[in-house]
Image (cartoon, rainbow, N blue to C red; front, side):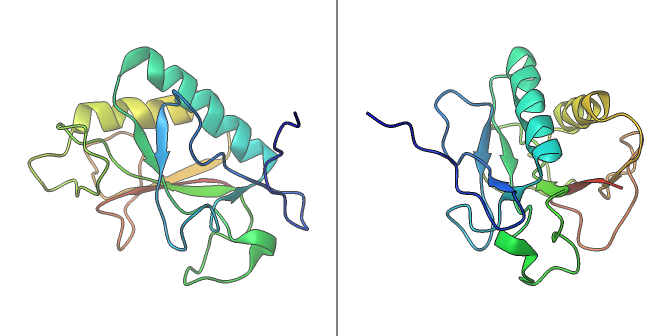
Length: 154
């Protein structure tokens, strides 16, 4: 029996595992089926550390969206070409695996702040997080970032 290997692109970036059993995250994004989830090993390591720690503090899964298309090809974003940035959905109070804006009643600010703090803990130094809920420490506003935060290594 052979063990499947994650798809890898020409840059050496690996596709984020799409449905790992008992993981602390779920995947979403366009294009789907992992086509826009090629991550630099540094980001992939961070995401796996974050999801392990997240599972220790909450039973809900967080949503991981667009990272990069294979080989850094454009796909409707000005960014998301290096494999060093990722979109993540804020947490919902009801635990649904669906988008939520920070202005909606189902948005869970405390849980989202905890998740962002975990990202910051495991990625000290030169990082930026864009998210329009400015009540969360350390985030910066950016147009069209009401229903996800954008983490990036600088």
